[in-house]
Image 1 (cartoon, helix red, strand yellow):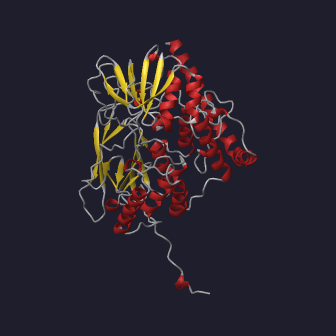
Image 2: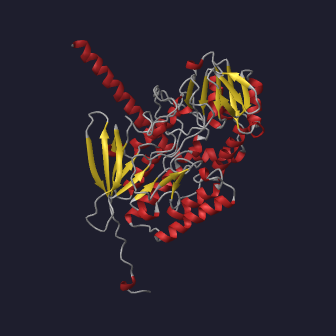
Image 3: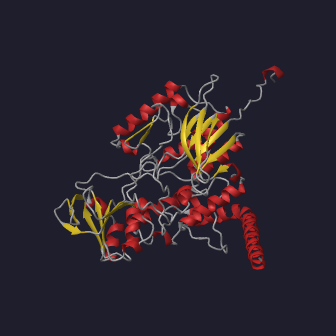
Amino acid sequence: MGSAGDTEPPLQLQSKNVCVVGAGMAGMAAARELRREGHAVTVMEQSADVGGQWLYDPGTDSDDPLGVTEPVRVPGSMYACLRLISPREAMGFSDFQFLPRHGVARRDPRRYPVHREMYCYLRDFCDAFGLLDAVRLNTRVLRVAPAMLTSSTRQWAVRSLHLGDGSEREEVFDAVAVATGHYSQPKLPSIKAMVEWRRRQLHSHSYRTPEPFRGEVVVMVGCGDSGKDIALDLRRVAKEVHLTAKSTEEAMTPAMSKMLANHANLHLRPQIDQLHADGRVVFADGSSVVADTVMYCTGYTYSFPFLDTCGAVTVDDNRVGPLFEHVFPPSLAPSLSFIGIPRKVLIPWFFEAQGKWVAQVLSGRRALPPVEEMLRSVEEHYRSREAAGVPKKYTHDIGGVEPLKMYEFGEKYCDFRRIEDWQRELILSGIAGMNQDMENFRDRTDDSENVRLGLQRWYGLAAPAQAQDDQTVARKDHMAAAEVEVEVDVQGQG
């Protein structure tokens, strides 16, 4: 038995003053983990509420429908009809499941609900963990840059603008976590005579509802998941919808075949060769249509116009780097981090794991490798992707290239438990269903026995929390209704 002198002294954790930029899913996941670790947290959000992309904004920038301004003036890209493409049973925080709210007004209990349900869930999450008092809404971050050093410890000067009263302020933080997402700044293709074409052009970032396109011929550049989803929305009112693809053979999946067979006004075309001033759109095979609108469903690019790192972090062909494990820029770690850079990952699970890692590194509970080792790791990642034939623009695509890396990250850096087998099966069956039938996969009910048993356990474990949360929601609804009644009564007496 060892002597008392052999006992290691207790770990002295540090508390940092941290600024989180963005109050979307990634930002609030990070804020919760930072607070849990004992840090002081300030979240800055330019919108009037939390939620990020899940906060639906019916407005668009009519002066810039292509979204060429950086940063875009309207950050939201959500369209009205969007439903989730991942099952809610696999989209919850580790200790706060995305449970259906049966019997609660304006909630969608389906497995693949509409986008508002995710926004409501994030609001419930913020309420449950008391996070809203850390959020400054209507606050746009103008600049994040290294502060003048008064000691050997790096700090960050954050300058922000309050969009309500126009006041600016500058503050110094020990650390900054950038969580601004990557679905705001449109990425546009280069098409011959695109500038000369005088009819309507827009990026899907500016799409909300189909009604403005009633009776039109619409050509859509790109036919990924959102492109097909929007095409199905448009076909209800448009005269014709022409989806284009670099390879029509690769694009002709079973789901695409069913879409074209079910709807006579949907068409698949090769990519656009040229636009003409008279409205003609000429495709690579020489065919053409006269179109009213060209919509670019061509994705988004990473954009951090507020961030000044003196070149330490750059964006090149949609690669943000160098970033160790897609989170820490080696030369500026750990005081600068990025939450939510990876694509095609399980959310919010992955954001929660990233936030936990950042919080524990800042507190001293965990340590990062030396700068040189982190840089070598980044270069090895680049080389392995290049050797596998993965283009640079997919540097941060984890789930689509190396899905196991997602789970390994959580286990390696914060002892995060993997999701259960039945949840993985549910995710994979959803992906398979979407590739077979884009219109109907969300409403399938053919779960396997493994999934059904998993669901029973999931509901059973979460039931007590569900009941308590439902009571909280009911109390809030009752209080809100009472406030409205009082306000009406006061106005009636005025």
